[in-house]
Image (cartoon, rainbow, N blue to C red; front, side, top):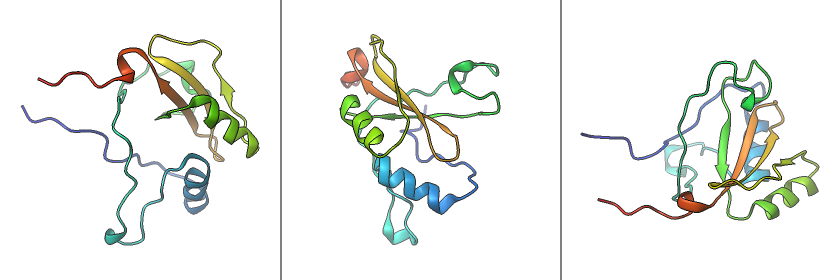
Length: 130
């Protein structure tokens, strides 16, 4: 069976797309899409990806009108939280450590929820391939 090999993009509507692209690049290092095809795209590090729907009334997303949330993997959650807070960005660090790692929550300037994840346990190492 043929299968997909990963996430090729995340697309969403924004009131101010250029400003929002700049915010993601400045504060999270997500390079903006190039102006031409020759400019290329942001390459992420290889690692685990969670793809799962939540119940329609799940509180995990924050506001009830939010229909999506993005989760970014980070190598050093404490350093990323410190960097974001130094830039004046409100970040909530989950005090609990879970079997799959640690998490922090923030929102982009348009109120879209973002979760940061420092993987641990089985998600911190690549599984053996068949």
